Length: 456
Image 1: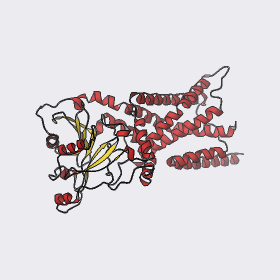
Image 2: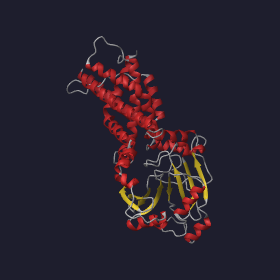
Image 3: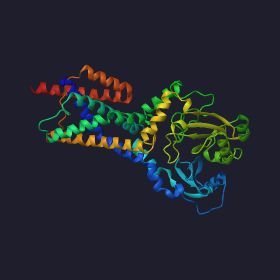
Image 4: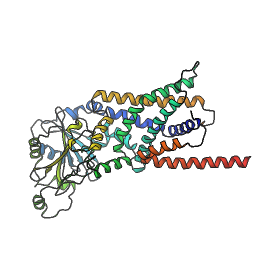
């Protein structure tokens, strides 16, 4: 075994773990919480999801929406979610400041109640997991960096496990050696599933996520197909990952011109919700049925005079009761003035990259194949926490008082450089951070050598 290579991996493995462990623990715990958000919300919001309103008079869905608009005057409807029984329908209402409210309509389309979107369990877990409640580019990059360096920790740990003595039988094991053994053994077992979980979460990341999505859009053969009429740009979670950033098709021009008297400027959300020339939602739902689009699905309102209704079924919506199988994923478009079906894109139209992430994201979220998926993800996450725990105990067992006790610094080998370059190419943000960290270590090494030469 080349001791220099081992020590180099050990040193970087140690420092990476030391600095990103708090963030990894936060991401893992919030990830576990998000695994079970549908179960938590079904219990916590039982009345809103399944209950009835105070009135029993049967209304149309449009009358129910009108009542909601009158009751919550500062908000206007931007999205309607139609779920399978026994779930109630859910309206997403937004005010001018961008705050959202969820309003629930029962089987009579009477108002059951409402909730602040930002305070729901799923959104709290999602915001903690993806942006630590802070948000912004820097924080999003920090979360992505933690995920990338976690992959380095796992892969470098595999190398040291098979090159070192962690799993070799000892005549008399110390507590440090026992902790190291469990740290190495469990880390080795979970490396592949953990790497899969991390990589399937990267499509939502700030840097690599945009890179992946751009590649899917630029190369239709492996990503998302180029259609004559493409999917709308939207930040709505219910639009499938593969189509959520594309350019919107338009409704029939003659209808749009009549509605706006030739003015094609964008309308605000309240103006759109009051557009009397648009078909009713009940009529739209009839057209959706005629096109054999079954529940559950979400309806995104048009946001301009020539916009369209977007009706979608997604495998990664983040909404309790709305997720479907990847094979059922579809994004379809209907004319807002006559309800005519315009076009659609479904799973069968995706390229291999889009199909991979359409499968990968629900696998990451724990609902691709039901309870076994949740339990598998939970087991991997708990094992990862134990790996961190045993690694921490191993360090404390050899740590000298008042010293960090980092592994020794050695010359960087060609093999180590090649390994880091490969990881950097696969994960560009990791590559950039590696260059920065390497430069810092070079500066520290040169500084220490200068001090040693002066003292001698």
